[in-house]
Image 1 (tube, rainbow, N blue to C red):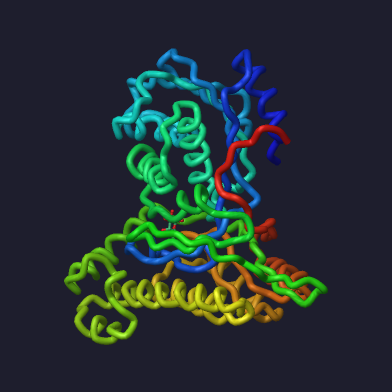
Image 2 (image 1 turned 90 degrees about the vertical axis):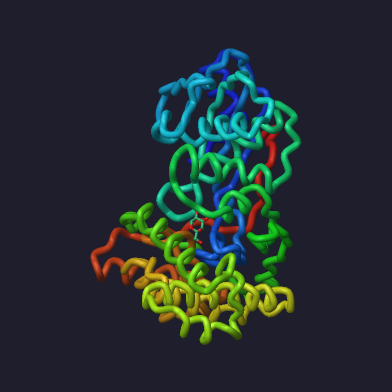
Amino acid sequence: MTVGSSTLRAAFARRFDGPPDVVWRAPGRVNLIGEHTDYNDGFVLPWALPLGVSAALRRNDSGVLRMVSLQHGDEVVEAGVADLEPGSVPGWAGYPAGVVWRLRRAGLPVGDAGFDLVVDGDVPAGAGLSSSAALECVVVRAIDDVLGLGLTGPDAAAHARGAENEFVGVPSGVMDQMASLMCAEGCALFLDTRSMATRQVPLDLDPGAGGGLALLLVDTNAPHRLVDGEYADRQRACAAGARALGVPALRDVPLAGLDDALARLDDEVVRRRVRHVVTENARVLDVVGLLDAGRPGEIGPLLTASHASLRDDFEVTVPELDTAVAAALDAGGLGARMTGGGFGGSVVVLARTDAAGAVTDAIAAAFADRGYAPPRALPATPSAGAHPITDD
Ligand code: GLA
């Protein structure tokens, strides 16, 4: 459970003898649609969760990072700023340390300032909801604020992603960091990962009086399996597909040209990976079109088609994700899909508000039948991206 800002400030004062310079918060994200498209220069449509990471930070001018996570007890992790190198800080502290390393390496005036940091989060790790991006982004913004770097959203996202890819060594696209930094309350963020153009798309689902729609988020609690190696493998297959087709990225294969493109690919696995990315990009555009037209009730089949494509063509689902989606649809859900990288994690379901309880109950019952760990419904109100917090 996340503590409020005054409790975080008190925790900071206890460990570091004085107040922080700033307190920031950055959210985790859920992706409505556009999965495994971000490293193909494609489209994504995430929104920010009410769950996130808060950070209290102070410049200490000692050349040392002193880092505490309230989720990891009282231990202060220390690292010399000048000694940072990829892989040198294990565990959760590698993310904030990686941000400092990345900002310095980019030539920003971080110098050997050093920082004291206390973080506190409530995004469940391993749920596919970007707890690590929330941690990177809150630290980027807090340092940006303290040092007056004036980073734009896309610049801040690039540094946060760089910390993850280059310092911690986990491959990813840029969706999670852009979502955590740029989402607006009540909206999904339509992002073109090639141009980095963004647009806030209002998620107006509930007209009131019980006649509305709800987007439900359920963590399957399925353990992640082989996620890093499999993710990198998908990236390689997509790059191979683009190379074979002679395009800069799979984004450049239009839906109308998909059959021709597939006929030119010899490798059966690459062919299916390409088909997922090309059809998924088209589905994002269709969902955005329906939301813009005020017809959110019609996006359900696109969500379900996305799941089928991730299951059959991209092969990133696991039985728990498929079971949750099938149970949600059986119980009257209008559409459902896995969200995030896959191999475990969460599902998102579109349902009428009056069917929401039946949907979450049906997922829990299906899990109990199969002997899976119980799933967990999570709050998913579209929330604000990274922001400073001054009090509770
Ligand atoms: C993970 C990555 C993202 C994105 C998704 C799949 O969450 O961090 O960049 O590739 O998987 O859409």
